[in-house]
Length: 453
Image 1 (cartoon, rainbow, N blue to C red):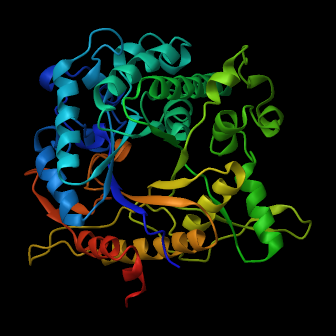
Image 2 (cartoon, one colour):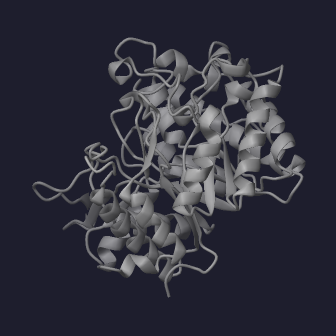
């Protein structure tokens, strides 16, 4: 059976991680600009000031997407580039950049999938409370309006927020990401509540103002637990953990997706978080629960689960010396089968894999090429698992490899290389890796090349 004939094959990147041009053409300051300059927050003091210089080299990068054969490109808009203060005056030069980028993509036959927010929150709005200030909901709606009014004559595919688990938990709870806060659970949940309201208002704005019929979703982390065996007991155990809240942290699926897709926080949330749950005002759930067309899932790894002797789910210890990526994340291909499957079962919407990939130890070899067999093997294993999900009836519409090119990997700076294209961060030279050429064959054959030896 394979993948559907209209399956969307693409690559992904985000504004702060690749654009650079941090002070160019009127761009404002983001929380990541400030966080990266805070001592001991980002590896070796790296910043996104230049990154891949995509702001000035976007035409070359669109050409790289063509080299790969990508049919679609997932990009994000830099809020501070469009509205430097977060609200108020619009930066025409910033908007014009996205005009040029979208036109270049369409001219190359590549469909843009636009993410409104991928973590680069305007610093002036952070100083006004950021996600903790309920006014942020309308700040986000105002920003979304500007972007949609400008681009929706050519852009149909939209995502509101990328990985709220990360910018809430890691940014406001663990202090590992910008803005680097370590807040009590009540305030983390308040930030989440406002982010979900912002998502809902964003969807309302897109649907009200889009000039072409919009296709709207969002892209949370898909926190994946998968069954250790194919037994019904183990499948049930993994499904239970996937939809539940097991720990008093914010690394789960349901507290994010249930409000916007079911119209209420899950009962588990009130059991686990108790009095720390945010006040739900009249109309909040109606605002969050806007109709969306798909769920984007960002999946890199998973955790094996089985039914214990008492019937309750238990995590299965990994084998000694289990495979890991350069980031020391476990290699778990089954996560790309069961993550989309459980998400589709729970919420009934089409699925796009909006991020999947690995950091590997890549360098330019003496022959001038970049040989990354681990990325080829990793991606093949994961895509075979995803294909099984599709063949089992999961409505999987597309796959976006993370990432198009090596880039600024947040607190890890430039140490982690996720790209299909190698970037020399001193010269900014781009070199397609072996995986880029392999991925082109996968795309050309709609996945049939996965079966080749």
